[in-house]
Image (cartoon, rainbow, N blue to C red; front, side, top):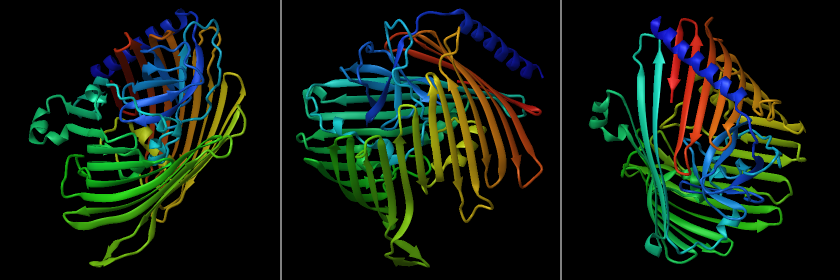
Length: 535
């Protein structure tokens, strides 16, 4: 009981102190401009704006999460219309993700172009698509080295019988272009995590703690021919995942072709496994059109397990913005081999299909629809709470529709509905999500978002209602968020019910161009049990 009161007292003190700051600190806020992710290369994120005037190296860019501006990127270099950035924390990005910048020196906070679309989980290849604009730029031969070190801690406290858990995570990412002005480049992204007082598990198997997501060298024979060696996800064949081996690509004007030979990371620990041999080839076209670009690629791959054929497949992907204000993406996979009753058969079967279309009717109204039969994602590292995991699983696969509408300036309304029916499910999964956001509350210049999530899955009926308040306490320096959610899950196979009250407080501070600190406190209260996380 003492432990429980201590955590509740800490949460209340932080909330009261924080709300005092929100209402007391005031000042001129910068002008907001909207951009989009145009290119992803390793750990480098390129964001395009109509103009970067007022944005400086070291500034923070933001992304919308549940219609709330959240620190997402740090500007490392900028040109007149684009910024080269590094991600903040554990944020992930996809090509075409909307990014918000804040121009300094503006007298009034004016929304140049308000973003109303919520984040959509895209096909893995849609995430990695390279914009034609960036792809047609000639690479510089000058050396350019950039890197980032991140230190994180995750502490879980509860009043249950289980012990408190303290986890530490360290990440290093680096990208070195044209080392010593040569044709050789390198990139890496490595994380190391462990729990307090469990160092023996790390000593038993280093792969329990060490995760190498990228570690590769690149050699440019010329402007059109490139060879990669090491572990890397190739944007042209992102659906294959990371490859440990050699990847060669040749550009022929608007066409490209490549070949790959290597192995897949181990299924269980993401380590190196020479027994998982794979090889393949791909061809494609990327061409600029009046309203954007068109990109198409086709790949053939064979994967083995201990010299035996594990999978032989082909996949196709296509993305285009040929029609003004319309973006289309599609991908599918065909398995060409199966082993049935010990007998190998060459067959053709559709194993994955994804299609999406996004239509911006006007500056105030946009529509989105998708059909998804992709397999569920496996996370080697995740820090989601239970409610977030349920929401994510319910929103994957099936048919989905979304409408975003901005009736007046600063007010955004979004509705998202989906349905999924699989043979193995006892009943269909249905979801209905809505959110209302007002980005300029009077007197305090803060943003308020209200949300509701209704779902019916194969095993529960659930509702999640939330409210989030966010504000720049010190513009460009200190940012805060306060979030409350009520969770109600009724399990259909039993009479059990789960009700949770979840409160979150977040502060982030930008010390300078290279140093950033974020502190988050999350408290979950349910009957007889309370859980608290600090990270």
